Length: 330
Image (cartoon, rainbow, N blue to C red):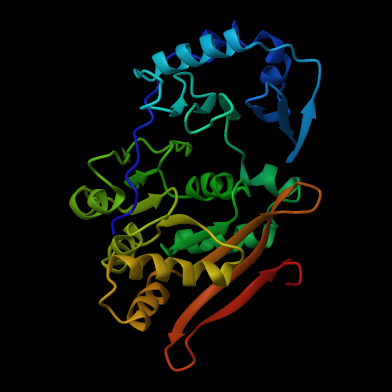
């Protein structure tokens, strides 16, 4: 099976164009400390602030305004919402927010909306270090790895801060180098002028982009926003063919598990290959794994840094050196 195809997120109207229909929650949309606003089918409203979600009361939303907002957002995406198109993922043209809307029949109780707000400027390494999210030693180790053109895998759960860390690390790549950036939805902000932004579609998935475009575009490094399917095999092949100093993120509960997950995704593309061969390719391609997670107080922080050695087929395990660990006992 191939990995799921992805629809392109098309930029359209600015966020201000839909605010008139969301006036009851405008204070939360305008707040610099709130990163996400969620509207449920029953018109209840929840927000995420400083990494924690809470319900807000007193918001007098009505279904007519929600319907009008959905239509305006859909118009920005050049699409028509309805039974045949019940899921919309739109990044508005000002780049300040990403909106996910799920409508009936996919959401049978009514429209469910999540508005993810982005900082106008990405976090810097200094900011993450100062707020305790990124140990200075970890950053220095990874910055040195980037200078040596070694490959880095960033692992973590949903909303753990993988993309934030990726943004920070990718900005350490010299501006003279050419980058191929593959992501969906677009979230990574790079200062590099010599870059190619690539997105998957219903007809062209990440595997095709890597095989037919990335390897022929003269890139020095590849950045894959998230490995989620069979493109893992083509990514490994590209890394082992010489695209060194590359980055990718992946969902995993800890750093070591990320290596097995990457191998499993790659094996799904080539089930006829020996799993040990695939794991050996992972060990050859990935030099470091850095794991991020949310702490109990909601703060996103680095919990592990592994340096990857070889894969021991006899013991069926990756041989890694733990350079940093603040991982709770499992």
